[in-house]
Image (cartoon, rainbow over all chains, first blue to last red; front, side, top):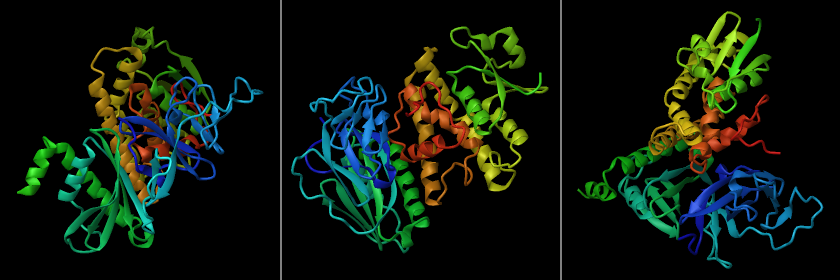
Length: 239
Length: 210
């Protein structure tokens, strides 16, 4: 099992600073998310073809990412451009790392393996990041618990909450006057990352609004982890 | 003997905390290399006389013989940093530094056990310490996520303090005990800033990017 078709969120945009990298998983497969010096994000297979080292352990210089083991450098298209042990060698163009289509939308970095993927997640306008929440549960269980345990709105009284999909791995959670966007990353069958942003202006949500929804994420995680089983959480909610 | 004499083992992350502090505070010191592995010199009678706990680091400063990285950090900051930046004198910043120093010495000691078990094959279960270590790092990541919403880049103040020094090794070395950095985005950002503090140095297990 690895990356299925369509778009997958892999990180909040703000979590991957220019000239930095991080490892992640989709469907049990290993990927590196990195941002080059000019700010463009890339998602690749997390494996240097030389000795199999994780590229996410490496480092970014300009528009290249370098492997930590022997310094092999790859350009933004995934092609090896420089091998320090053979500085004069013109590197064969067959030495490449599989690269995935990468876009940024809704404050998140998205990847797709499809050569011509479905339309990228729609741009919802200004968003304010909350966090990426890592949970030991399937994506389906996470969604059910979110639906049964929504946050209180930041600015107003509690009202009816509504959770609806707005893309394959993107959900919209309306709570009173507020809207959260939830990117669902299936790390594996039993582990899920929930990338959470607030749809709205920084002027309204920056600082206190972010902290309000951060507190909810901690409570949500606690609820998931303290339940004897996911089914029990749901049956409690149903009462 | 005048000046600072530091009894060090290069692969010990608690010794690394002290090396970072000595370097970041811009101090001069003399190092005594201790054969902790495989020699177990730190539990020899000579070393037990300096620290009955049989652990490193140990730092001598004039007539003082100190053990415990957090104690040594606080001593160095208080006695050698007149600006008070590394250990703020009062208020919430002092309390915050103390809270995270205690967290480092108590809650993060599980990361020392997890790493020691993975690296030096010390007896004991490997999986339980790893899970506890991951949970301790998560507490740090939660804190730094919230700090970010206040526009603060550091654990306890508007600048780096000895709390950041005490906390850095457990995160930076977590791959030694099988915990990756994937799920700690706020700590990744903090570690990048920490590496840029003047006087920063690496140790085996923490890559020196070049």
